[in-house]
Length: 368
Image (cartoon, rainbow, N blue to C red; front, top):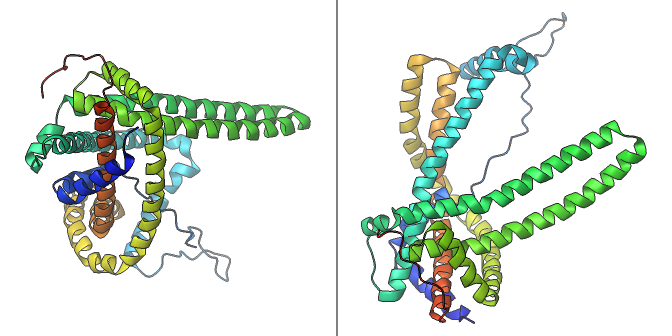
């Protein structure tokens, strides 16, 4: 058994004494952290126009010229797509292709930042734990920008496949039960509903267990790739062997991290309300920073299109910059936790390896 208390204290010491890691923590918080999405506000704005005393209709465009222009653009370009979608099939296809391409580009950019940052944190913490040497940002990024980061990405892709298959299977069963209830008798519909609820509960529970197990094993797979520079298949074998030989320590550390994450979550809610005055102060800087890319996007799009569409694109481009500056304090706090969590698992891996586990040694895949 490893000394969990020692690992936690050591990770805390590294967090506050190795401040270059904070930069990588912020990058991880932005690219790998759980972002919040804004919900749809239930405003009472209606597109239907109220009738006047003569039975006609008065356009309800409001008093703001921009709002009138925006609504006119929506009614002219968006509403017909939903009322007569068969007439806009090519347009809808191109919109879908554009949205897919946009998310693919964002995904590539996120991956190119996240995995080198994660590999850098793992390797920098490991080196600091062994030699006490602190690397600078440039050296740390060089340590992360390597084939090890690519292997970590492939490992994440592989371990996500069972979860994707599980979700697809659950959706397929749901569709099957739906058609059986619609096409069957009343008794079959009731039985199908009860069966669907029972199976859904079992599948959701099994899915949670699967995600937890894969998340725990991931900590060992990616560290085998990052620290020992093993190939992808060997990373899985060595990571599994490390977990299998120390499963009690791994399970106990997971429970400790679960408790810490719950505590951090509760503290995060408190911190959010405490930082409200800071958010108010940051409103103006956030708006100024977001205005620059927003105006650039508006200037470019206004060459090809005008009116509300140019403003919509400008707002969509400016919004991430606005939110990034506005919630910078929360991003920093989240980055601290990312560093602390990664350090704990890296030190755990080192402690388990120091126990003398006799694993077959593979020649490094490459030197980087």
